[in-house]
Image (tube, rainbow, N blue to C red):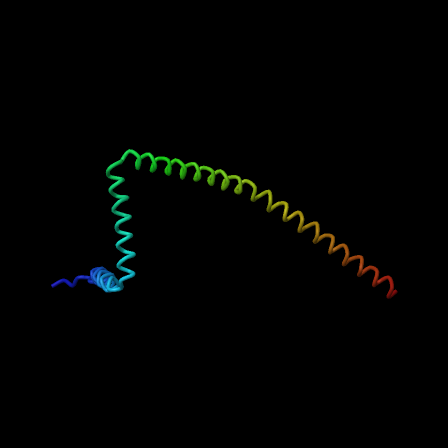
Length: 116
């Protein structure tokens, strides 16, 4: 005898029971009714005028494709700039580090000169 995993079945039945219980509230029922009516009217319009829907979907896909291309270009630009920026940061750090080292050396020399 094989045991079945009842987890998903239990989740589904629990969701159905929770949804049914929530409909006891009048406000929830009214909101759900409005939502179902809006959705069904949109589905009806989509079925009735499929050409418009296809056109909208195509334009959205084209826009997303253009946006993706733009983002890909920007990512490539950032990849190209990153080594340059890293080099500039290193050079700046080295410059400031050398200046601090020089200042410390001068201070040490001055202290040694005053102590002698």
